[in-house]
Length: 186
Image (cartoon, rainbow, N blue to C red; front, side):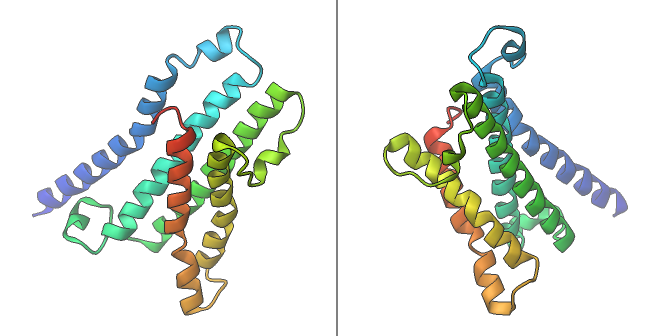
């Protein structure tokens, strides 16, 4: 019986590691050898842009895995998921926030280097054209992220907290539209 439990834990952990490698593989297939961006002449900010794509993919992927874990934890599929722990839920939430923020910092840095000035306007919604509209879905997701985090940190009362924390599903939709629209990996 202990052997089966050990095997299940190893399979779960192996599946988790395999799932975490997906963004790296997708990114590598999309950009080719990333060392080219540091060893060859490329436009200003291009290396930062390429890194922002990787971090954005990782943020989206961890968000997707996290939501699947939350939504499937009370289904028969839960046998393949890590055991549910509030501590792990919070840790993944903070990882998503950190990766999302790093993605934005890298992207704004890349654009700023390309333009020769701080591209702070990228942090404001702008629905003037297709590209900026898709960027704005990401910006709206970025501004919604603290609301979801604050609701999850127990700073609000019961029902209100749960409702605001469930805005994570809207956050996912915003980020999905953003990534599918502007991500060349799609």
